[in-house]
Length: 114
Image (cartoon, rainbow, N blue to C red; front, side):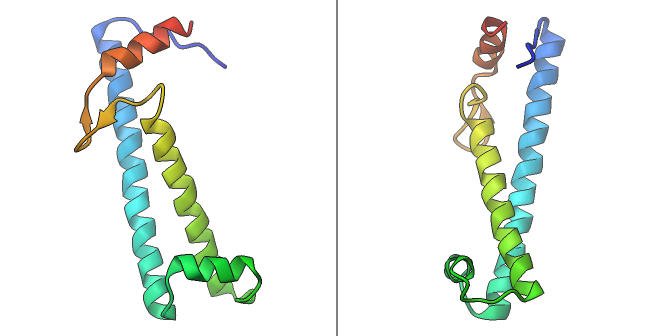
């Protein structure tokens, strides 16, 4: 793994802003994907969780629309995993109401990992 050296207040702010931007991008992608899934659910009269179980069991066939729906479900799972990774260690700097609580702890972990 490549080591990162972060020093100085402006660099700390840069790292903080990069992480905040990445988090915002992922959250917006999650919201957009959830909207797409709601549209599939309305169109097909079935919750995505039920559809996906049937799809994985081969009960839904391989129509293009179903394959696209399944791909959106998989995309949402990846996005949620990404946000969990970003909010977990060593990036766990966001808690309640999307507030940054401990950027300095994160920067300290980066320094110690050198």
